[in-house]
Length: 553
Image 1 (cartoon, one colour):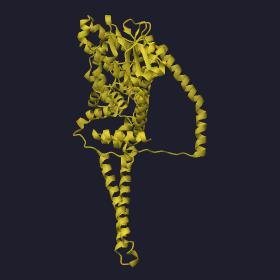
Image 2 (cartoon, one colour):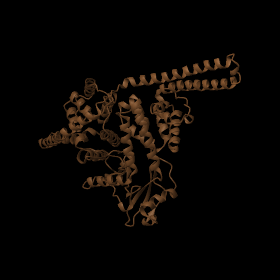
Image 3 (spheres, helix red, strand yellow):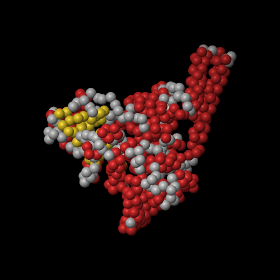
């Protein structure tokens, strides 16, 4: 508990120092600290325009868990305005290397004593150092060059502590902050916690890598590294080392005689195959995770963050594509509302009008001609303005499309993401409309309906028994009244304290200034006690008022 209190105070201090005191109040962070350990608010930086930069700086100071959170938020165009996304995108998951003497026990825990002797070579100077792990170059007895990723000692304890804190603060904010309710901050934080805990488990990344390798086994244009399970565990991942050029190093690619136009199409096609054919995609295709090998083959690494396209998401995507191809904003609005979560009643008419305006901007263009990234960003702005929240997999998919288009345009300024996307989208849509698939989905719905019907009598019987034994309680929630009720409660508390203070002053005056001799002996102690009590109550009133002003900043 002591560690948590120290961390609470550290988080509050950093937020205050960077002018983010409103987050301290909204999250209930201040309430979790004893009065004597609450930091004093610092001066707030001038102007709301500075907030994105100060938020990024605060996240960097708070450490790896918060950096990862910032990186996640930078990808959620449905949650944050462009200014915040742009600044949070600058967050780098780099860290000072941990000395080999601290890392070696982790490797020994997986491979046993004399772990280094299982390799023909092992360079103890890391190739890269990130917040969760460090990467080393090594060689296997069969001559294979490998990279060995080793988790930092103790990072799991640190990350889990911070995740517990973040989930607790998000739960408080979800009850007391309207913006947190609108975007289901507790649910978002739970998703983030699941994702980050998965990244801590290298065994899961190994399984993801093997699945991608199997999916591309017959594709000579793409290489996925082999995983060496005998040298891997939940804290160590050993895999084949890929060599190549950075996908954004156009000068080196040209010097190697590789056709950049063909390369852009090849890379985008690999990503589309993952989504539409395999239903399992690389959710973090940034340039550092993509190599250009000799002959123009694409090499992909780092599968800690992945997304899946299940039957439900596939059907939702198909409905969305159909509405786009038919240029039907009403149908598109319905598709979005079925797909997205929302904490307030959506304005369907306004949403349809906004989508109609978006369609007009790109009328006359086919999917192959349309600027996919700009359309997605515009659509996400509409989603955000209507307080809708995309499912995690959909948000990851859209992010992947935007990143892939950006990479393609670096390789080829004339690259069209739409031309690569269009045939896959049409094929998936036609598959969903296929009578056989439609009948299968109808059959599944029928089975689910029958199961629900079979369970219904028992559920109704249980409900009636509960009503008979416990009665019926009706819970009403008026979210708009909650801030007013809380404010009135605080005002009432201060009024009660003020009345007590006035009573103390009057009582002390009557007791100490009266003429009765029996009070003379006790006059000084009574005055001291009365003034001290009055001072404490007055101090409480001043502190309470000041705290309220801080919350309203």
